[in-house]
Structures are given as structure tokens and as C-alpha cells.
Image (tube, rainbow, N blue to C red; front, side):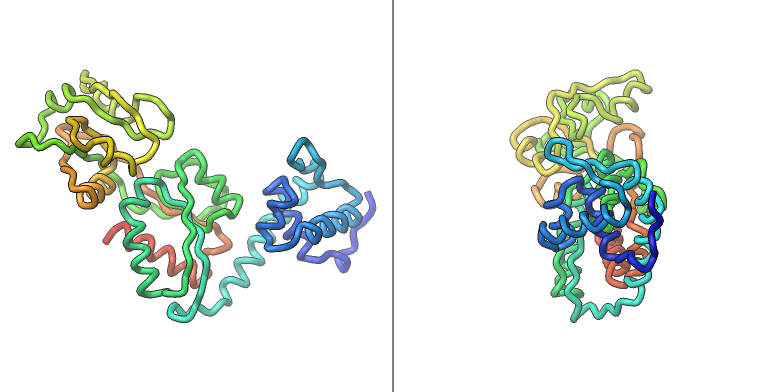
Amino acid sequence: MKPIELARIDLNLLTVLAALVRERHVSRAAERLHLGQPAVSHALARLRALTGDPLLVRQGRNMEPTERALALMQGLGPALEQIEATFRAQTEFEPTQAAPVFRIGLADDLQIAMLPRLLRALGAEVPRAKLVTLTVCYRNASAHLDDAQVSAVMGFLKDLPAGAKVRKVCSARYAVLRADTAPGTLSLDDYCRRRHVLVTYAGDLHGTVDETLAALDRQRDVAFSVPQFGSLPAVLTNTDLLATMPAHVAQALSVQAGLRCEALPFEGPSYDVTLAWRPATDKDPAERWLRKAMLRAFTD
């Protein structure tokens, strides 16, 4: 392996390599970097000449990184993050004048419960800002954050990237959403006797609440499952179905769709709502404003 002279290394080449390793595709890397595809291809050729290694080899439609490329990114990735963080920390942020493009990941329930308030805060305080929201869940939030597709994610999160900044927002409880007009609140017997619709990313008919009921030697009748909370008003309307969900989204849907929200007739489970963000954005004034706005939108 030939030695590499540090004076010959162009920092721009390293950002191209990082994008290529993440995207596994020249066109997608070019889009991420806001460059033309020929520029990225030229940078890859220079990197290959510099390292004496192909770095990425084509496999079908994608390009897979070599062991050398992965080893380079293992060492250079944290350094690039630190460089980005240093420059971000020096950026001035005047909310009324700034025009940032924020990219965040929100679970489906939080899009319903907090996104309207977040958009109002943006409009009032950072009127020139733009917001891109990706739907995330515990299965993909970490990947979106690690790949820098978003600067922050919020929801029920698991297995976050090493080094990610994390803050617990709250411990979320569950509530019942219903559309029927029968008087009174539900008893446990009523709850178990009625048919239920379950919101689940797993595509099955069993959830956390069913495990809690099993511990009480009870069970419910889950008749349907849907992948998103936003479909519940249409599903529940003119039916006797019950939907059990985090209380924050049940309360939001009850207001938005005129449904009934009430407490569970038993001691239900809970889970942590978490906000996580990339370390490179930790000191960035605009991103710090965004994270505070996200917290206010959920807790106010």
C-alpha cells in the first residue's frame, strides 16, 4: 500500500466518500451533496488514485464499499462529524431572518399530536424556515439518524447510534378512543367484550396491551390492525370498535375528529418518548431552537 501525503488530501473528497458509503449509489450521493453525478464520479476516481483501492465496487444497481473504505470511514466518520459540529457552533442564528431547512423524523402518533403546534411555532418565530418530516418508528429511526437523513428523531426509540444525543421527553401512558355514543365509561368487562382495532407497525393482531391483559388473566378481541394512527377516525366512525393508543394521540384525535377519549379501565403499560439528535448538530443554534420547539410542541 503506497503512503498517502496529507497535503494531497482534499476534505471535499472525504465528504464524497462518506456520502458514497452511506448511499451505495453515485446518483443518490450526488443528490445528498447537491453535486452533479460527474463531479461525484470524478471525486471517486481521485480517491481511488489517492488510496490505491477501488473503495466501492458495483454489485447490481448498488456500489458496495470495500474493507478499506469501511475502515477509512470508521476512523474518519467521527472526525467529519466534529468538523461539522465546530462550524455549526459558529453559525449565527437570527430567527426572523434565518431560512434553515430542518429535517426531522417523527413517529406517526407525534405527527398527529405535536406537528400542528410545531408548524405554528415555525411560522411565528422562524417564518422563512422550511421543514421536512419523515415518518419513523423504532425499526428505522436509528438508521435515518445515523445516515443523516434527519438531524433529530422523536418517538419510541431503540438501538440508537453510538454517540447520539438523547433526552427523555416523558413516560407515555395509554388511553381508549371510541366513536360510539353509549353513556358512561367502559368497565374492564366492557373493554374485553368489545371488538378492537390495533395500530401496529408489525402487521399482526397482538400488542403490548394484550400482554398486560394476559397478566390479569383477561383478553380482548382484536378484529383489525392498521399501520397508522391517522386512519383511525375513518375506521372508528359509526362503529362500536375501540382503539387503545398512547394518550397524547388519543387526546389529539378526540379533538380533531370529535371522538371520545377516556382512561383505560385497568392499569395499562407505559413507554418512554425520547428525543435524539446527531452530535454534529448539538451546538448548532438553529437546531437547538428546533429541538426546544419540538419539546414545547409536545409538552405544552
